[in-house]
Image (cartoon, rainbow, N blue to C red; front, side, top):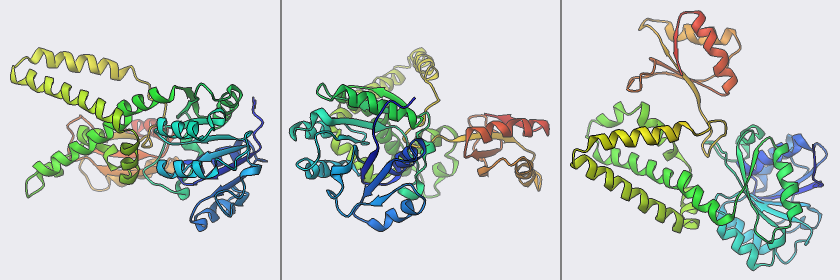
Amino acid sequence: MKTYDFKSYLFLGFGLIGGSIAKGIRSAQPDARIIAYTRHKDKLEPAIADGTLNKIADSLTSDLADADVILLCAPTGTNLENLRTIAPLVSKNTLITDVGSVKHDIQECADALGLSAQFLGGHPMTGRETTGYVSADAMILENAYYILTPSKETRPEYTEQFTALVGDLRALPLLSDPIYHDYATAAISHVPHLIAAALVDLVKTEDNDDQFMKTIAAGGFKDITRIASSDPSMWENICRSNTENISLLLGRYIEKLSTIQNTLNDAAFPQINDLFRESGAYRNSMSDRRTSGIAKEYRLFVDIPDEAGEIAMVATLLATKSINIKNIGIVHNREQAEGALCILFDTEDDMNAAIPVLKKHDYRVIL
């Protein structure tokens, strides 16, 4: 049930996340007035054409007075600049929120500008490999955690109402202190991205001239390094904003690696067994229902005979059932006991629908 009174929204910055939120608002509130501003106004024309936006703002400050909610959806550094620009002009009755993955810096900025009561930090934990409004889709918010970080001064009614709005976007609202949010996201997102990038760089450096390592890289290696393909500029900004937490946790991770190295050198292999057993149990206790910073992949593996036309046969079987395939390809490294054919799907429903179709035709399916 709708328990908020927001009727007009102003987006300052309008890329993948801002556009996806705006589309979600349009779906939940067809009569909402949605305005956006970016430095490159031509990029907003598609949002006007598809009905997501009512208007393109002429300037950063031109439509502040009419907004119930202002959403800062530019890169983190730009969000800080925009907040400073609008601070003297914004109504005290306007809720201001953002979508950045680091919260302490913008909260400190809001406090310094006297905006504490009306500022509510936000972090939708979702995304895609592609950026910009052309990739925006309200679906990426569904079942994704949307963290809200009210300060002690944030008006409780703003937190309650925006939490209800997040629910209408079909996201999963969570509340956190801004400081702990940054420590937690450093551990579960920021440090892992650096680790993945470093691991890929290690393989690149240690590979031979024939690129043997690159050739056989698949399975586990590709799974744990997929996030290394994230937007470099975005991650530079995140590391600038959350340096202290990232450095602290990276240091603790290095200590753990040193301990593992010493364990290997001492031939204390039962401790390696304990490490995999305990970490595996903890990993298996984690929920898979939410999306992450990189969009979740829905894939399965199929054992097929090495015969002409087999891939076409699989694709045709799925096509006759109107099951959409995102990508399909042969797996050359089957170290994780995958099937010979990997099929990627756009949705979990498509993947689940494909399983009985393939099994009915005697294909062995491995999730």
